[in-house]
Length: 121
Image (tube, rainbow, N blue to C red):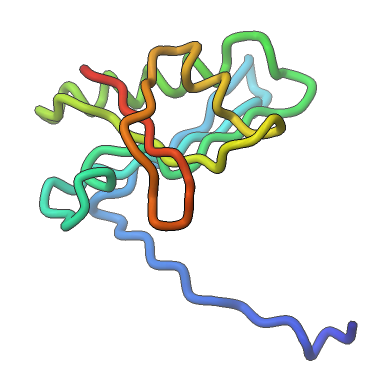
């Protein structure tokens, strides 16, 4: 594959509704979370949601992901939301066990078969 066969797609992130944060352990970045708060979103699952959550491989299992997700939940609550959602692809290698363990419940599926999880605030 040559470099000319690659392409960059536009990704729209609204800076007015996006909530990106890093998680620090001292001065080391060990995690990242991006939430979105848009009460006007047409689809309910995108009004107060986790867009992305990442934890450094060597820091996984230490509670960093839970800390980040619950911090985003606190922010959602402070903005008047009563539910935080997240969408994930089911499967053994996916994040389903993590989200269920920290309190999310599966409330449906997308048209592509991904799970929609919700955490009641």
